[in-house]
Length: 140
Image (cartoon, rainbow, N blue to C red):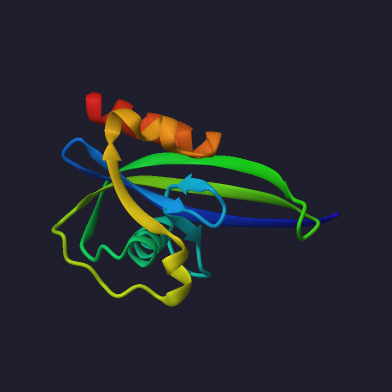
């Protein structure tokens, strides 16, 4: 089985007592916004870019670094093992200004949910762990 390694970065965006999640109805998933770190791009820049592209929110600001964790899984459809180092950042909105999203990004439906429900709404354990980190940081 072929092995793919890469780095990704994303963000947990908070607004008052709400968190921005992405519904992906075609796969029955609720996710955090994230994506590949491009060559020469910092994790922070990639996180801001990816969150902007996937949510449409233009004015984002990084509050703190939530750390990195390695995620490994098998993509049975493409017969490959994925090893991904994920970097996440806690973010806030500067304002509600939006940009036009690329057609590919329309597979994600941004939704604001109460922070108290966010962990339970997320599909994957790795993203749940980052959400827990974000909520602990906010409570400190």
